[in-house]
Amino acid sequence: MPSKRQIFVDDVPIGGGAPVAVQTMTKTETANLAATMEQIEKVAEAGADLVRVAVPRDDDVEALKTIVKRSPIPVIADIHFNHTLALKAIDAGAHCIRLNPGNIGGPEKVAEVAERATAANVPMRIGVNSGSLPKHLHELERSNPVEALVAAAVEFVELMEGLDFENFKVSIKSTNVPNTIAANRLLAEKIPYPLHLGITEAGTKWSGSLKSAVGLGTLLADGVGDTIRISLSTFHAEEEVKVAWEILKALQLRERGPVLIACPTCGRLQFDMDTVVAEIETRLEAYEDPIEVAVLGCAVNGIGEASHADFGITGAKNEGLIFAHGKPLRKVPQDDLVDALFEEIDKSIDRGAVAVDEAKSAEGADWLAKIEEENAGELTPERIAQMEHEAALAEDGDAEPEPFLKPVKRPALDEDASPTAGRRFTRA
Ligand code: SF4
Image 1 (cartoon, rainbow, N blue to C red):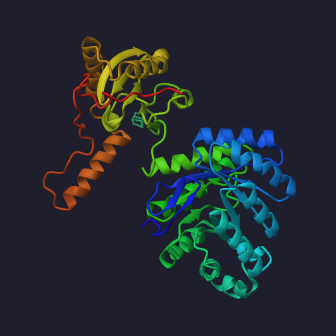
Image 2 (tube, rainbow, N blue to C red):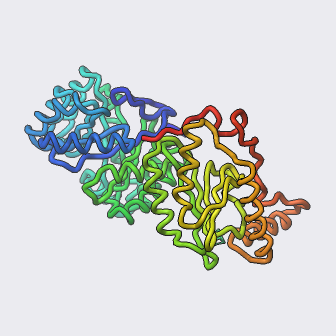
Image 3 (cartoon, rainbow, N blue to C red):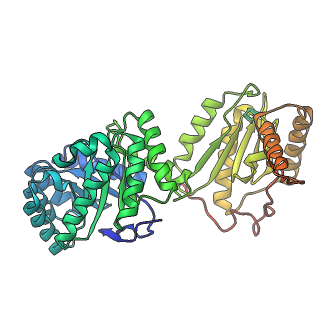
């Protein structure tokens, strides 16, 4: 369930059923205006809805005054230890203030910031980190770290409510993935405010992305979480944004840009799939619409499970096939597969629908059918999955199991009926 409350960070709604907002944090010294703006432009282009900047010094507040005016997306000021900087950041025009009420110098200082934020209609993110819980919760933290994190967050929520300030979202962060999941689940049951999700110091691009996908993905799949930040040890904040989007796209919570699917490959692979997939992934970055592109390592299974894709290729030793919505388009030499795939995508953009040359399509279908026939007895991963699925259904007493790889019914690929008709894929 989404949070009951909704707040707005400038024009971006958070919580209350709004799309999960993607945010990141700049890695530059905020006072370095040129470098910070360059990074903000990059993260905005990559799809960040919000950006946070560190404000540890007066110089940063000075830069913030310009940043909030020039930034294409709302800016959150990240403040620790110094409530005066929080007041100055609000005066500078920050669209949101992130602070930890436990390290800002006491409830009176929090009250001062809340009062200024109310006057400016600026929301806050209040948060607790596993490394900085208040002293009276240390014993509980040793016996039950999840309850300690939630207790700290609830105390902060009560503090803010006692100050008549309810324009906030809450974050509970830990380096421990299971604790992050358990604590956020528990907190979501206890408070109505939007939740900011993140795994603290998740790690490098590789391990950090995986930890975040597991932790945040689990929560988001449960409906917990209203905005996410992926923390990665990289200077390139846009990488964090890309990972966030992959998580949201995988869960079908939001759509942005193409989706690439590829078989895992096996001993039947007959071409350099790694290189081909990498090239397709890079070239797809220039497209904005959610085109689904499939890459199959061989034609043994036919188009099979990739028949739902907008476009796809299936490779063989010397030749490969381009297909769209489960229908063969044309057979091409193996070396030309990627270029031919993008020719077809671009043609469909220009035409507003997938163009089908029936003679070439029939030639491709014959080629595919021949390969399928020659390999009818092959136990491919896809066929094994189908057999297992059918066996499971039969065990459940289903006399006529649905075929796992049944062809997806598609409208004919003409101007009027194609799923892409009237929809223009746009290139950036
Ligand atoms: S059998 Fe399946 S996994 Fe193996 S290369 Fe062909 S499509 Fe890929």
